[in-house]
Amino acid sequence: MNKQVSTNEPVNDRIDDRAERIKQATSAAVASTKETVDRAADHVEEGLHRATDKAAGAAHKASEKAAEVSERSREVYDQTMDRADAWLEQARDYVREKPVQSVAIALGAGWLLGRILRR
Image (cartoon, rainbow, N blue to C red; front, side, top):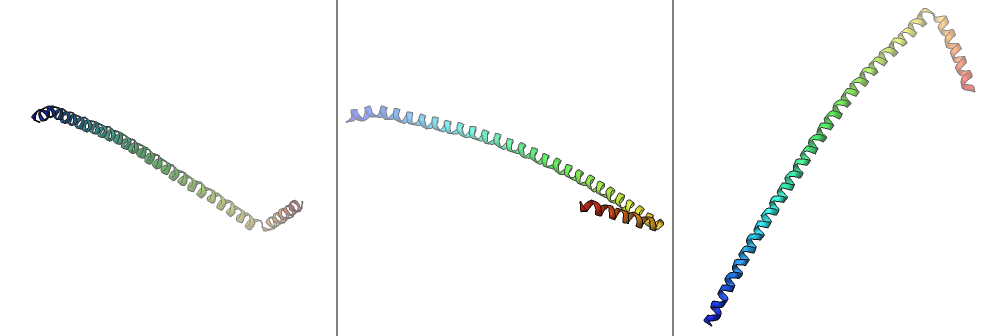
């Protein structure tokens, strides 16, 4: 029996050594895989941050442009209203200065408009 024990011991030692090497190789492979996954995750995160920054920049530019267009639209509206008020005031002054001619023009315009709309 001693012979079997002694012959099994070197085999068992080799099995244990190989099992230990497999464990070390597995641990090394897992560690390498973890590093690769971490690097990939960092790369994806950096890409997402850059994309977010670009999107935020574009949104700021669009917002500024919209504010500029809004301001310009307000200015054009105000100018148009000022012109309309000036024309209305001129028309009122004309009617005050020449009431008979104003009534005659109004009657003529009404008659002409009526003729056009009948057709």
